[in-house]
Every structure is written in C-alpha cells, then in structure tokens.
Image 1 (cartoon, rainbow, N blue to C red):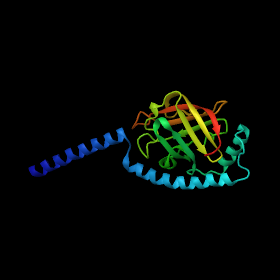
Image 2: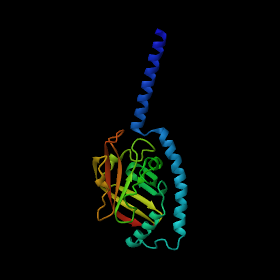
Image 3: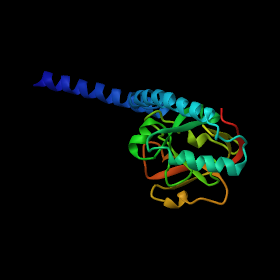
Image 4: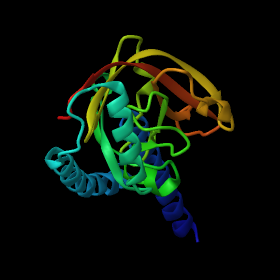
Length: 218
C-alpha cells in the first residue's frame, strides 16, 4: 500500500506540473490542440473564398467604382448570398500580426473556424456597425492580444467587392450580456470583440475602428 501511495503521489505531481505547463503555454500563446482544428478549417475557407473573389472579378455587374452607394448595394447583395458559417472575407490587423478568413456567424461552431461577423449587424460597405467576435485563448486565438490595440492602428477587411480600412478609435469593457453594443451609429465602424479577462467570459473587450478608406478589391 505504501508503495502504491508513493507512486500515486508521484503521478499526481507530474500531472500537476503538466497542467501548469499547459496553462502557461495557453496563456503565453494559445491552445495548440484547438488551433490545429482552426488552421485546418482556415485552409478550406481560404480556398472557397478565393473562388468567390474570382467570381466577383469576372462579373460584369461588380462595382466599377468605389462610390459608397454602389458599394453598399453590392454589400447587401453579397450578404444575401452568404450562409452562416461560410467564409465571407479576410481580416488583417497588423498590430496583432493577424490575417485570417472571417466567417459569417458568432455561434460556437462558426467561431471555431475563425473570427465571426455577427449577423445582427452589417457587412463592410453598408455604412453601419460591423461587429466581429473572436476567441482569445482557443481556436487560433485571433484576438488574444486585443488589449494591445492602440488608437490609430489599422484594421483591414478584404471583401470580394471592395477592401475596407478602419482606424482604431478606442476600446471599452462591457458585461457579457450587454446587447447595447450591437446598436449601430449613423456612420460605419468596426467593432472587434473578445472575452475579458482571458480564460473567463464575464465581460467583453471591444475595440472600435472608424472606416477611413474604401479601395478596389484585392
């Protein structure tokens, strides 16, 4: 019995050390297991998105100018043809060293594939709120360092019909159940949202950016 207890104690110590090491890895970087899944999904999403970009490039009715009214019409049309969970564009945030395919939806399954645009808000170019949520420790942790964004930083969203650049204007922390953050203003802005603090979901960290440039699609 004494030998068994010593062996059990040693196993518990090893298990504790491994758990601590795992927690440190996740805290410093991200959960490597779920990130493998997201990386696999991102490859598939990227391939499908390339096809959507090619389709828009070949369309005679695609926007020929970056006139806001024309872009808004195309954004509405593109939104109507996008299903929940599908890749809709690419989001790039230089400060976070982030470039990923953005999906449509913020339910658990879509967010496992990448940052998700909330269907209760709007697509880039519609002149309203573009609300994007992302994980902070798991599934690629796209917004793990969201608290490092500063005023003046850029957020770029590439859509098949246009490319949009937003300039960060500020951040705030709200309760997890505060739905007022989904209210749109009379101008276009992007909101990047992640759980706060890390490893918990009691609050949300939200960083805002105002639209400052519309360019032809990449």
